[in-house]
Length: 263
Image (tube, rainbow, N blue to C red; front, side, top):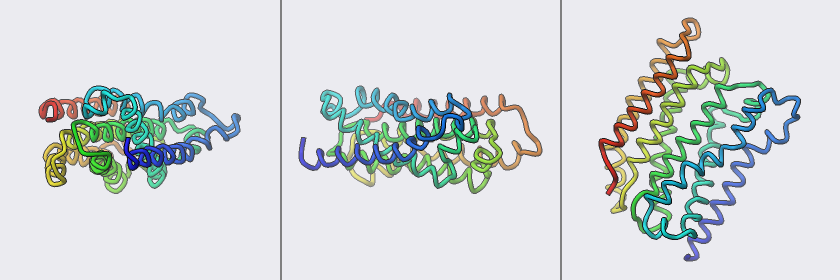
């Protein structure tokens, strides 16, 4: 391991501890009597493990040969994922997703979005590890694009459909289910968009745009659906939202399957 790789690993893990600690420590420090949902608290505390479960199989099977054949380098990029996904999750506070509020105010809708956001960002990061490349900076460059795609879905939902308001204030589980499905679909598609053997920056952006553009359709559809159809004054069963979320996932899987294994 080179000096810059060692420093990269140390910084990634340290930042991961800070970011995840900032997110989860307040839950542990909250008076048990104020935790209205033990299961919600448990789900939130397990988020780093959920991320690891998503990232590790990709590193072990699809990453560069020198990564998947080396426990040391696998650990390096697991540590990088710990830090990267932690950063993405801490940025969710900008969208009024606060973990303490989720357990003290009992908000299953917000916890759903947090849980599936973790999966989405983990898929986005994992995709950047697929294929051969010259170093860790390639993984980060790829993760910026793929994770940015997931944030695009969140931003559009917040600005157009007021989806995050519906989740955090109205505690609308149906909206949370659909948004969660859209986020995971975005992470899966964009992760595939940045996957593959590194050639240059232009090729990375070109592949990302070529493969990831359907995310725009999913995001716009979900935001418009939230704004015009699934409204507080005209609620519909959350079962319909769950079906739509599953359809987002199926669409994403079909898109990834259509493009096949990255080269």
